[in-house]
Image (cartoon, rainbow, N blue to C red; front, side):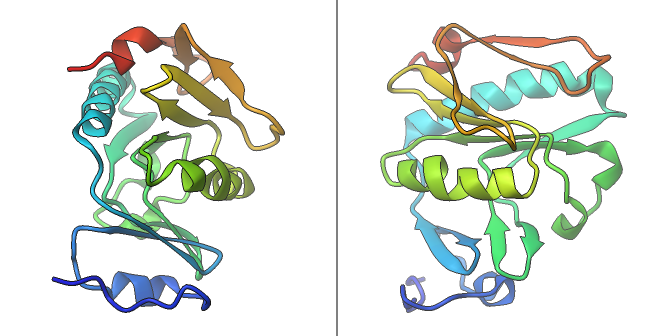
Length: 185
């Protein structure tokens, strides 16, 4: 199915975007600005798969605390905001069959692709900070680095060796070697 006719100079709502036909593109909103992304590259998916596997294993004993999922997902905090993080961790208490119950992201992850890099680093990062996403990782598999952002950060922490994260203060720390995450399959 063809991409719907979209006007770049107008603002959209979540309802309008959710009514678009399923055409293989990812549609997101940043305060009404439409962000359109094509299907990702295979390397993107391989890195995403590895991250999902490791986060799922880490969270298995903490299922009562949090869960991990990947897109497509429709996370919305406002009438003109709709995001689909590549991967995200949210409190278990927000689990349901509807995306509308997921309001808190403990971790959001975007794996960079050439077509999404600007939106991931600027537009979506600002949204994630604005809506209080606790930790935001921007994974650049080509450069083998991860930018780590928190809501009040003005600059990211640049991680090149080991990515460290914990779902809650009292829980064990997850350690992910960047070289293993970004290795070509």
